[in-house]
Length: 436
Image 1: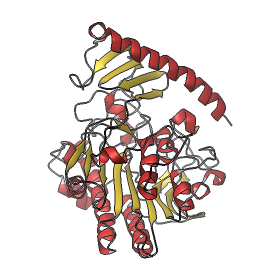
Image 2: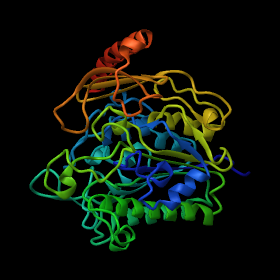
Image 3: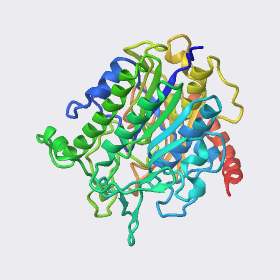
């Protein structure tokens, strides 16, 4: 009997800004494969990470929950022995329970201790790094001072591929998994790239493609071009295996672009401008749009229209119920999950339910409902001192978040304040329950 359930491929960039792809307005970076994915799929123009930093965003993607509910609210350390994501069902374990082969190729960043390795969370095959970033050629984790740590794993085994560019290797390993599994049954291939996260390393061939760009932007463009080539290899493997038509491919990023100039290994945090938020305010570490709104694409030729745009807010936590909906054929009953299935909305068959979306990071808070957004104590990025104490923003009129419209929309402001108070109360309960 033919299995008509779709294969699932989730491609996840690291620190990629909303303005860093051709199909999102970047005229200076060659991303033909991702642009083609958008042409053959749905552009998610108001897509959000659940956090402005990496580990919490990844926890939300895999659990379908807000970071506090998932039990990861901050960037996890990269030293060996670091605990991580509390044990719980994940997208990978739920798909494996449904008979899917599951593989992860790239960055885990949800615990380096073997007890928190990705194989414990439903992944049959694993290749990549457990920490948050490594040198792209030696695969050594340098950040944090003395005693750098090598961090490249094939399953439970540490391996050495000195001199091989990590983005390229990740793409190759993911493509090999697809080629091998496509004839056996449905598969879930999760590809969390490390690019374009610092350090800024790119092969000469990619640097040559963008030699006309100024320093900083040139390195970023070269790394994104290499990422795009790796995506191209993965898509080519799907096509060669005859699996592209019935594969749901989702592409996004864990947060906005980094302003940390430790990109250049000097440790300073607020001056690097290689990445682009596409005119949005803020960057990585900020609950302004530039820190949390990220490029998003969903493509499933057999199950979604091509060349369309989904212009409603959605979040990474929505992927789990959306993907399970696609796998099961019906919306799943997931009482412990915060995300919702957007499958019918992405197909153009329904409008998503109205809801309030929440973010918090290191004392910053934000809530969005409809086109209004309330921010409190918001910073511009990871470490700048200035904050915006409180403002209500009309994102339809002011996507750059420069004008407070509280006095003009008192009812919306009151409702957002109410939602934020409820969220803070719930957040305290979740945080207490998630501690271990």
